[in-house]
Each structure stands twice: as structure tokens, then as C-alpha cells.
Length: 562
Image 1 (cartoon, rainbow, N blue to C red):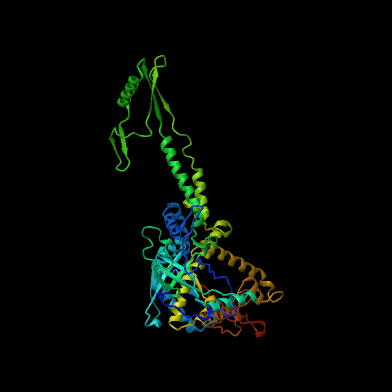
Image 2 (image 1 turned 45 degrees about the vertical axis):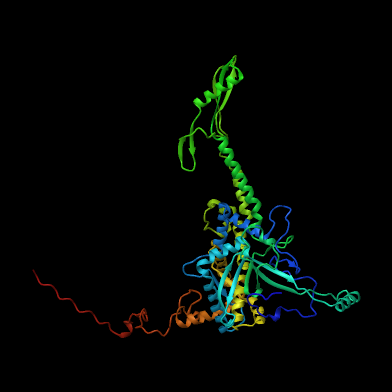
């Protein structure tokens, strides 16, 4: 075996114990066949005529994506999965569930941002995701400095799916005659003592695979062998179990798209042939002989026939006799004794506006692509009502897009693993434990999720208000927070700390100073009368009787005479 191109990361965690063996070769969900050392790869006979090689399959997917209806559905899916925003990145790493120090988390976030910069994901995210969705697979070559691998990935280079293949090959074992005899004797005594094969996994890069001929029927050793760890390989997760081939999500829509194409083509031909009104000319030829009658009919036809021809490429109408249209009028001879020369008109096709079959196959295509038919041609508009008004198809579509995102994030997982191990931030063993707790948060703009979240919050707050008189009597505050508000332990601790901080900062008032009956702050009994807003003690009228004789008011002077 020739030396592989690229680099390999020694991962002892992937090696099984010598006692943990199986005669069945590993089959990851990658659509990779198990080949012997002398076998071919990627070539098989398809009796159904759908595809013969993986090369033909990818080519067909790309041709399907050029069809307008199929392209519209693909764009709906890609736009839903990858949301472009001027402020936020389409994807962020989520490490809240990762049990690691803040320093490690910061390094992981920095390296993930570095990978996004290498991919130029902010600008090219739509194209990357679209290529992965259409082809059903995605290859990136992780280029590193072999003299200084601790510097990490230097470049991520995209590889065309038709130029790269993933090979799982069984190694040849050279055995002596003694070993063969001994192994046979051992198998006879103990059937479980099996000579388990050793497998080698690598990629083959063939830059000429898009040329002429059938490149997939070449020997497996053709091309450049690249080590497994040097390539990021992300598939759709769909595998044809009968042939062991990775499929795209477009695969089940092949038949629906072909049917739509045939229906549309037949409809166009029918309308072109039946739409115009045609005339029938009955020409009286009298008692002329057959030859002369035909000549006379031809002369009349050439004299009165429409000679104007419409050129569809230039939009011109010109007189050209050498072109015969399939929509020509009919010229029929009629013998003496008939009704003489007559012209009748054949009506055009009826019910040419019926396109029910077209709409049916369009909806069938959309359903095959898991896109709600209500999105076809903008049907249904944009609903901003209650979530109960959201169609069930939209809910299914949202879950479908979430599954796609989960599968697509395997690409980031592989790149991040390589980067962290090369930079000695984590070990391969540590990564196996950490990778399960690393999630990727995609930017989301589906209005259904926002409506659903807001309505749930509204209903929960309404329940809290209803249950408030019973808190302390039948329910505790902790029960209300856990069962009604559905807060987790982490959220409860986080919210308590934030409330304390905001009370200390004076953002919100202290609940101890609030009257629960009125919701207003308690009045300070020791408040001074001069305090702002304090009217002071009420003014008491003097007790005049206890003060002895009442002093009479002085008389007013009398006025003078006029």
C-alpha cells in the first residue's frame, strides 16, 4: 500500500479491545461499501434504469436543481435553514451544557470563529448549504503545515463531490502455510475463533472524474489516496441500503419531477396543435383526370395558402414558401355532383385553460421535497395570527429543517475536532466526551416558533396569576416556578441572581417594601412633615370653651354720612 497523502490523528479511543471483535465490517451512515483489495468501487448495474454510478446520480441531482419548480423548493429549504443577517452570524457554538472551564470554553469559541473565517461562512453559507443539500455530500480538504501541525488548519479547500470517493478496504494478510493450517484447526475446534479482517479507510481524489467516459468504473487504486483525517466528509444521512450509496434529499422527487416535465411538455404540444382554428377547403375539380385534378388542387393551394411565417427567434414575420407548418389548412378535392367549392372551419381545442393536472404534479413535487404545498406560488400569505392557525405542514417543515441542521453541523464538528487536537487544546479522548455536549445554534427566523413561544409564555403567566392566591396555602413558590413556568434549576438560579443584582442596583424595588394588597410601597410612619409629598399631621381645631371667655371681635367703624 502506497503512503497516504495528508495527515492522520492517532485516536486510541477508536480502537476496540482485542477481545471485542466482530466479523462484520463497520458501516457508518456514510454510504461506503466494503471492498476487497482487488475490487472496484462505485460501479454497479441498475436494472430499474435510475442510475448506474454515483457519478450519474450526482449529475442528475444537479440537473434537477436547475428546474424552476425544484429550484424554488430548494431555495425555500436553504433560506429556512441558513438565515442571513447583517448583524448576527448564521451559526454560533453553544457550550452551556459542556462541563469545562471558562478558559477552555473561550478557546473553543475562538477556534470555532477561526473555522468560520476560513470557510467565509458569513458570505458563503447559502452556497455551502445548497451544495450539501443538492449533492447529498460535502468534502473539504483540511490543509495543515506538516512541519508545524500545532498551528492548526491553514486552509479549508472545497472539493467537488464527483472528484472524491470514500473507500473502506480490507487489508491483505500474508500468511504462511503453517499459519493457514493452524487457523483452520482452531476454527474446527472453536467456530468463534475467526480470522477477523483489518480495514483501511481513506479517500481517493481523481481530478479527471468529470472528463469523458465513465470514471466510476476505474479501479479503486486510481487517483491520489488521501488520509481519512485530512478530509472533512459530511453526508445527508440517507443511504440506499440495497446499493450502499449515499443519496440526496432530492432523490425521492426524481419521479415527481419527471412526471411534471412530461405533463408540461404534452400540454404545450396539445395547445400548439389544437389552439388555432383551421380551415378545410373543398375544391371542385369537375371531371378532370386524377393527375390534372391534383395539379389543379396544388395550383389553387399555392395561390391562396398563407405564405407568412413567424420567426420565433427574431420575432419577425416574413414571406417564406419553403416552410410548411403543421397547422396548415386542409385542401380536399371534390368531384362533380357534389356541393361545389366549399370552405368550412374546424374549431380550436376546448377547455385549454384546464391545468388541474399541472397543479397536482406541482404539489406532488413539493411534498416529495418536504416543502409545504401552501408555499407554492405564495399561496396562503404570511400568517401572523395565533399559532393554532399555523398549518400542520409548516410544523412538519420546521422539524425537517431542524433535522437538516443537525446533520449539517457534523461538518463543523469534524473541523473543530481537528483544530482543537492539532493545537493541543484537547486530546482525542477528551473530545469523544466533549463532543456530545457541544451544540450549534443556528439563527432562526421562522415566525411559527416565535408565535408559539410568545403564546406559551402568555398562557403560563396567566396560570401564575390565577394560582397566586393559593401560593403559600396549597402551592409553594418553587412549585409554581418549576411546574407552571417550566423553569429549570439553572434558570431558577440565574434568575434569582439577576433579581438580587437588580434590587441592589435599584432597577426594581425591594419586594419587602411593597404592600401585597395594593402593590404600592409602604408609607413610612416616621416621615417628617416637611418631606416632599408629605402633607403632615392633620390640623386640629382649637377648643374654645376650655380656653375661658371668648374674646369678642372688635366692632367695625361706622361709616360717615354722605
